Length: 229
Length: 229
DNA sequence: CGCGAGCTTGACGTTGTTCAACTAGAGTGG
DNA sequence: CCACTCTAGTTGAACAACGTCAAGCTCGCG
Image 1 (cartoon, each protein chain N blue to C red):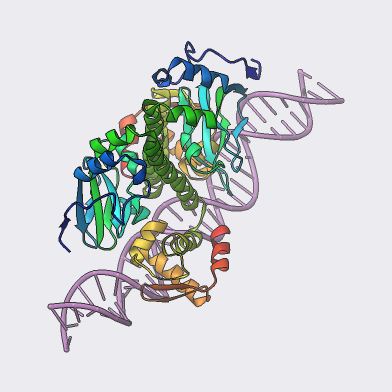
Image 2 (image 1 turned 90 degrees about the horizontal axis):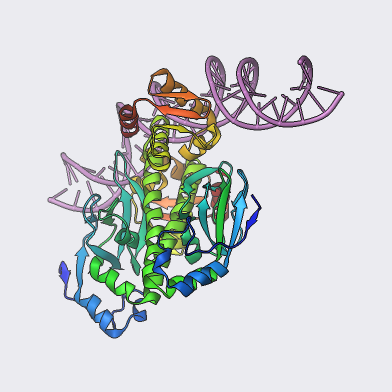
């Protein structure tokens, strides 16, 4: 797969954002002409914390993690194909306050941010969808902060497993994309504790693991653990 | 002060949102006619977690706290006069996932949410300001999550004091509106630890306290504590 | 076959919470 | 006016939760 893919036709693109059709034909063509498509390999950095915001970023194919870098990393969210990466940065700072990297080979559409904003503002229905997307991010992060602050590590790890099963994989059996360290960064604990709790859950027959493969045997029990901290 | 204030003229109102003037005159009148002004006493609940979203809420006078209720409360933000209370709820769930209560006697403008949305969508420039407001909330909560997760309790308490001095009171001496318990809920720790650290800071000559009155004597040192966790 | 990254487990130390006792001040009723 | 009570604040000691450190394991890859 070449690193830069030639511009696709946004109107017929099978990976396009589901609200793209709200725009008129010439706006879509305009976005297409102001868009660079880049293929990132697994592990590559897509956005580096502290750099300038110049594009609206869309995950056409693949999966990425959004995280805050510091003395330790905090993974705030996982973004899979068909979604923009946090559009709120277009309307706030001119610098990213987070980093983004590819969890698997990913195709990212980078739309010039000025052009994206101009287009959005010319079409209220489209801007509304942008606003909804940002609003949903805010709702999600409120839920996340609540989970992180109010629960102990067992509950938080249970939360994470449920989240991936229900939202990302839509199955109780999955080949987990995160390393143990990343799972820990997503659940705000140390890697050792993430491993320890996975082992406990396995010993208790709540889950089964085989390397990166995870099988949730008792989802209801896992939910109860999540709820009772 | 009567509980319900008669509708004010939004165009000449000294408390109006600074972007209100983007709207046409008849839209402003429309908002005015779809708005109920309620005076809340200190301590009263303005929004109860789990209830339906029916209004856009604007803090015309006073100050409120937005918090998540659970086994313990987590205060996510303080909203003072001249700001809307988290507009993102208009675009997500139909239920609040947080509660809001008055930290002091407050005048709240409650605009019918359907009308607010309809008006915003009829005027892209106004909708952009709504989107910016939501975007700023998201940026702030990312910063907050980062502080809460990466710092220890001394650093978190230092953060909170700096936040109130710089953003809310714009002075290093202030009559603190929060109880020790609320300060703890804002900083994610127990009330006992909040008290203990305040005592330490006082003993070390970093701050002075006298009941609710707080005086930051060495703001630079406090910042260094915040930065070095 | 050997190396290294990711994973696993145990022992131990630190951080922060819980519990309990106590103080100060504000409001209430006899 | 004084006892009474209630709430907010304060401090210390015991305890639990979590992180750190260290050692060893496993599996894929050169």
